[in-house]
Image (tube, rainbow, N blue to C red):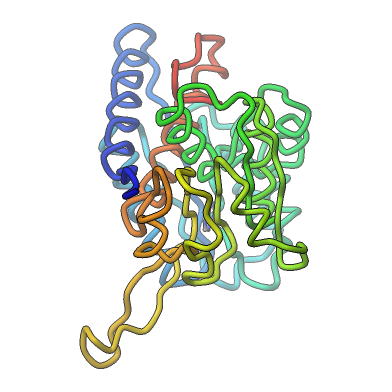
Amino acid sequence: MTAKIIDGKEFAATVRAKVAIHVARLKEEHGITPGLAVVLVGQDAASEVYVRNKNKSTVEVGMNSYEHKLPADTSEADLLALIDNLNNDPAVHGILCQLPLPDHLNEELVINSIIPAKDVDGFHISNVGLLATGQKSMVPCTPLGCLMMLRDHHGSLSGLNAVVVGRSNIVGKPMAALLLKDSCTVTIAHSRTKNIEALCRSADILVAAVGRPEMITSDWIGEGATVIDVGINRIPAPERGEGKNRLVGDVHFASAVEKAGAITPVPGGVGPMTIACLLANAVTACCRANGLDEPEGLTA
Ligand code: GUN
C-alpha cells in the first residue's frame, strides 16, 4: 500500500482563506479588526524567522499585527509591563510571546501573565486545565492543526486507537487531550515506554512528536494507519553539498509511506498548519471577546 499524502501546505491555505473570510465579515458587519500581538525577546535566529512569518501571515488575512521586539537583556518587570498593556488593549485580541525566552526570564510566569482569553498559544495554565477537562479553551496551534487534518481525513475519530509519541506540554499532552475529546482511545508513549514499537503498530492514528530524526520506521506502523509527523529536524545532507542540511520528520518517510494509509510529509505537513491555526485562534479569541459566534471549523 502506498499512503495518501496529507498536504499540509494546501490544507493551511484553506484554513487561512476561511480565516480571511471571517476577518472580512468582522470588519464589514461589526467594524472590528482582529489584532494579534507577537512579542520577541532577544535575537534567536529561528525565532526571528518564525515571528516574521507570523506577522506576514497575520497581515495577509486582513488582521492587524503588532510586533514587539525587545532586547535580550529586557528585565522581567519590563516584559510583564508590556504584556499588561497588551492585556488591557482592546485592539489586541491575541498575544503570543515567542519561546524560548532568554534564561533570566521565567517562562511560566511570563506565559501565565497573558490573560487566558488572549492566550492564542493555549499555553496558559487555565487553558491547559480547561482543555484537560474537555471544556472550551484556547487550543495550542500545532495539535489543533493535527486534529483538523485528522478530522478531515477520517470524518469521525470516535473509537479509533490513537498513540501519541512524545509527552511535551506544547504538543504531546494537548494532542492526547484533543483526541480523547474526539472519543479516541488514547495512549501517550515516550522514551520509557515498554514495547513501544508494538504499541505504535496497534495504532489507527500515530502522532509522532519526539524531535528525533526519522526514529519511527515502517516497523512501527500498522498497515493502513494514519501517521501525523510533527517533527521538524535539520540533519546534515552532504549529498547536497558541503555544509548543507535537509529537513526530516520524526518518521522515516520513505519506508512509512509504503505501510501507512495516510501520512503527513516533512516539510509540507504539520508545519504550515501551525501558523494557520494561530490565525484561526486569533479570530476565535476576537469573536469570543465580542460575544459573537465562533468561526465554524476553526476551533477544536
Ligand atoms: N517557539 C516555537 N514554537 C512556538 C510556539 O508555538 N509558540 C510560541 N510562543 N513559541 C514557540
